[in-house]
Image (cartoon, rainbow, N blue to C red; front, side, top):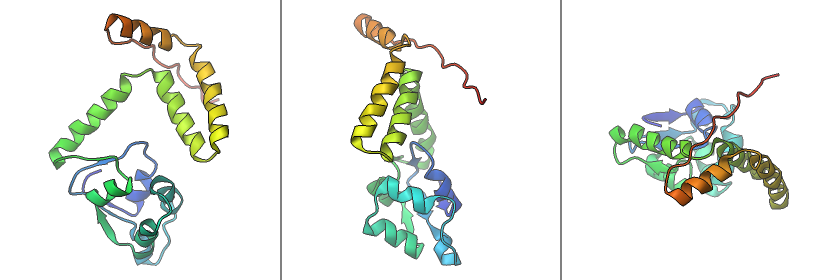
Length: 165
């Protein structure tokens, strides 16, 4: 995220799994200042990301701007780049680190994080147990252990194309 992230920008940004920004980014839930309530997901998603505390309510009710440092403090972004020019290389590094992992494990981790956000711990544990039983059907775990034993990088098969039927 770089520059101004206002209104609909916050709505879209709330949908991202990982949010990084440059130090000059400005955020605002500006709709309230225009006579509207934010209506594309900010009021539903932002509190689940940063909590339902006083500050998030203040930001939503006032339309006040907040900067990159506060976004990181609130937990809305996970990192602020040292400079605007370093944002893209930083984001690419995060992507590369994710891409080094088993695609099956990455997908199952994301599904479990999303599921557990809206369910009890017990339900989340049942869900991940089922998901990991599927992961054991792939060769990724064996490949990972073999690579670790030999000091090599693991090699994982691509995920099958997901049917939309």
